[in-house]
Image 1 (tube, rainbow, N blue to C red):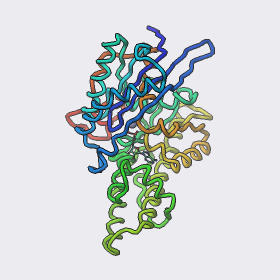
Image 2: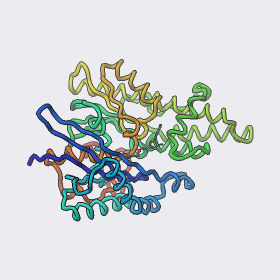
Image 3: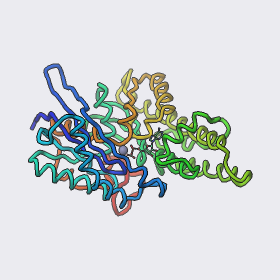
Length: 370
Ligand code: KG4
Ligand code: ZN
């Protein structure tokens, strides 16, 4: 069943950002065009900052209180009336169950009231496809998805098929940025704070580990790096009674250097596998997810890509971190392809995108993590 969707409302509430966006998708004779008419993101930083991490119950309540006004703002900014919407698309996993439920319930009410189709979208798949919302990148492409909950190298074969080449075996890099920022007394989320402090720091002052660098595969580990950074900070505090601003700058810069090195090295393995699989002379490499907003990481991976015969496609920073435009975009693509199911609307805290890949991250009673 091939269908046309033109105005799409996207809704995102899987973690601590309440987001709504309006997209116009036009399919004409000369190909298709995606316009992001509005993208509103209401972060909850002030609610969670005090706890140095996301408190799921507080997040869920805040989502249900704000989804309505967030959607109204998105409609207003796009100059669209609610009944002009052709399709609603909502994140249904993976994420915090309370937030997913808030978003899905809100979207269901809206879809039923307006008598419009509603699609449940995988948040990780939306990050991976977000690059196509802004760049014309052809399938298959290699992507590094680095966010607050995940870190994976994937081949995006098409909008439905993903092949995982490697993944973190423990923490995500975003978690690492957030936890290091928390014990250094910087704000939440940690990524932008660490990136800023690192600009003034000496990246060679501390030699932090680069976990799994010698393993010839695309798997990564960040928890040992996080612990090493914490130990170093504790050592300095013990010796001199606290951290000078320059110590914090140097720790941030040295930590970031290790992260950049891990990404660079593992991206090269991923590129080798990609080239072996497809025999491409030139490939496409995209970086997506919150951590991909980091300029140092973007610049380093751009060089790595070009050196290894890949064209580089960074997602604009505002669409690296969580947003609803990517949810609307993937919704539009799935709707047109006709490949979606009502079960997709069931909230799923865990929902890996490559089900064939061996689980590397726990396998508890709630299922495979990623
Ligand atoms: O993709 P995202 O918004 O949410 C998840 O799906 O997890 O990613 C959020 C993560 C946070 O851990 C945040 O600290 C990190 O992305 N982040 C950054 C930067 N901006 C956000 N990490 C490093 N450098 C940044 N500039
Ligand atoms: Zn995300």
